Every structure is written in C-alpha cells, then in structure tokens.
Length: 146
Image (cartoon, rainbow, N blue to C red; front, side, top):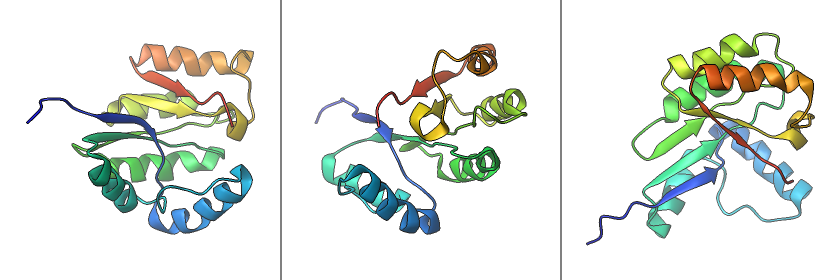
C-alpha cells in the first residue's frame, strides 16, 4: 500500500442538466470525444477507475450572470475528493466582491479562460481581478489554449 496521493488538477464537470447540453456542444466545437458524461458522478467514476484520489474542477463563467449558479453548485460539490475552482467573468461589475465571496466560502482559487471569456491576459481590465485574487490569497488557473 502506497501513501501517494494522485490529484488531477484540471478537470471539468457541470450540473447534470447543463452537462447534457454542454458535452455535445464542446465535443462538436473541439472535434474530440469527451471522456466522461460531464457530471460529477461521471468524474468520480472516472477517478475510481484511474485510482485518482482528488480532482480539481475548473469552472468557467462564460457570462456575467453565471457567477452565482457556479458558486452555488461548487459549494454543493466540494468534498474530500472534489476541489472546485469557481469562476468570475472579466466583465462582471461586481467581480471584486465576487472574488471575496469565493474566498469567504472556503475555496482556494478561481479559473479563467481567455478564449471562452473573450479577454487577453495582459489587458488592463484584468488588473482588478489579479489584485482581488492576490488580496484574497487565492490561486488563479488560466487556460491558455483552446
């Protein structure tokens, strides 16, 4: 028996109803077959098959109004085996308080995706996000490919 712990640091999962729509759309856009059905149940089953102890779910707010649903869902999924990273949208006028809320709910970081959120990492409008992330001692995961 090993004391090792395997963490998959970049996974995606969605609420069940969203997964049923999102996975076919993402498969078509990326021209790739998804490995799971996009649900947490599917992710946990995949983790069990691969002997993975913990997965980090990287959410993406593609619209400003998705912050609260993503945060609420992330709170429900948070467990010993699942570490969710909620997301804010760069155009959210409340992003500083939303990042503080992420910290206050015990999350360790946020996920951003320049392609899906339509921004460049070096844009000046991103500075308040970076400052709020630092001020709240959070980590920032940024997807840099498709």
